[in-house]
Image (cartoon, rainbow, N blue to C red; front, side):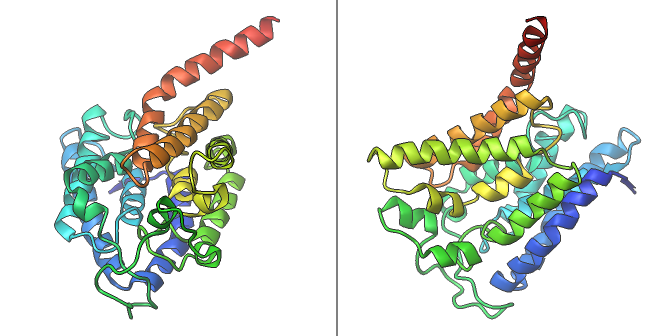
Length: 300
């Protein structure tokens, strides 16, 4: 049924520990959300690809997994389903399927429901508990990004251990770093893209913080929100990101800088989805510029 794709399987393998940790934090609601998302996403691609007499790609499994982990824990099932259907259909299928899309399908779907249902998507947080025994079924407290915005500092240990509110899979800092090592070692993800995204974000955040323009320090900003998660799993998408080495550096810089600016100066507390689509939009141009720079260097 599925078109075999080794690189996509490696990404799925790297996501398994993060899924398990998210179940530990938020209980079996995570499994239920994943079941809805995978069913809707796979069915959407199956219907489209059947008309073309082609198999469903294993890439859709990655899109469904990343989309699930980017959801707030209290997202209604029907909203989660709408988002992944939109992402697979309009972020991928209408371009002709796998390998032809210019935007990341998971981010396309998430951004659609983020804009369409802003109250739910920015308020569906849950205090993390232990393997299904949740501290609260309603929101009480604030996410680390909200704490940083008002000038306070979330506990650094909570940021490192991942025991804090946020999207389902964004807080597993240690597991995300280990996944990055695995993906880079297996040449599944580009270290240039990851590093340029994180460095550009940290540098700009540091400049703004130490010049007194913002109140969020670079380290806490790096560990709060989804910057690490998107840098490892979404910015490195082999289809919608830049392909050439110099292009990957420019691409990651565009995403990192955009994320910092949106997070610090807009009404949106995160901005990761907007930053990735911004990078997706310029990825072909950045590859072209990188190619011209390389040719100029060779001539010299």
